[in-house]
Length: 438
Image 1: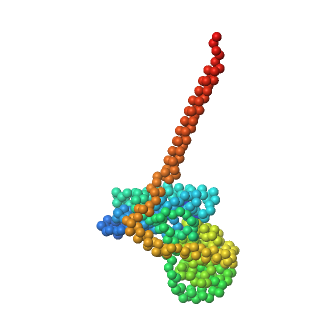
Image 2: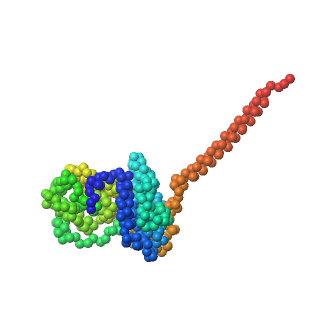
Image 3: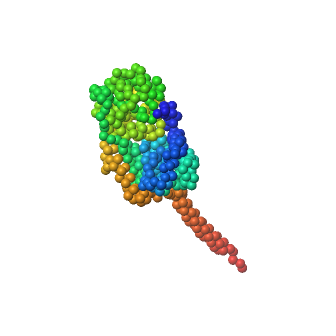
């Protein structure tokens, strides 16, 4: 990956920058893949498809295939619910209580956070049109079909189901329409055998093991030397052993640290000696930690990572560190706080139980609802009217205008009655006061 710490720092906590950069990624991806001969041949073929499945990130250009093949559309969100995934099926996302996953907050927002959340909500509803939808429309008409409907029309008319890689136990409880389905943990499989060298290292950890990984997107090797030295200095002072994912060789590695370019994180988390995961707070890593009941020290850098870690901190299963301002003392403080206080492990295990306690596995849930859409020819009965409401009806502006009109009419009638009554009283009073003629 060419994604570095500097790029992550540019995105940071700003929800507006995060959303804009995600839309830019989607625009560039569609601009590169739509001109390909293979994709255009597929679009122009006479093939028949019963269903089209796309990724709801910012790749809205692919909704054209659902229109072309006259097929229902299922959208998969690999993170928690993206702000622009809600409107396509009318899923409630009122900014007073539903947290935009690009703001640095949990569900109990302050006034300032609710203000930012509202602005981010408006941006995801309005600004997405010129920055993503309109560009996708131009790309579709240039490379695929000059007469294609707009992306907005295709998404609205074709989307039958949204499946999102989250679960209410690890984020927030919120209302969901029937065709907005949580499948958080669908990627988790039974743990596989751990590579022999790593297993031997972990088996011999009498004080437990700490896993350190910043995921597959940001290159850990792009972190500053001072940050790396702060981590290594802190690890050298701990009795635990550390499995450290790092893409390059590291000088001066303490004897209790094993550095590997890649680690099977899911398999390692299932090892009985693992006591802590130090990670960036990406969706997959967070789900894996919650699933296995392992507390975290989160080091979010951008996007939904802040929201993920803030929520786990609120639930008592994590601590948060600022990766850009790490010192050896701060690392030691956060790590020892989680390791030495049993409530973190207890809360992590409680979350794990809540996360696993379901009627069906995430995979079985995804299969069921996919087949449901196929069985019911797009399942229009699942669609909420909210998906098609004009904004003025959604905000009840027409109802408000009606009530105000009624109130004005009533006030006008009352004013007229009072005025007439007053004039009558004045008239009667004037006649009774008029002096009698001789």
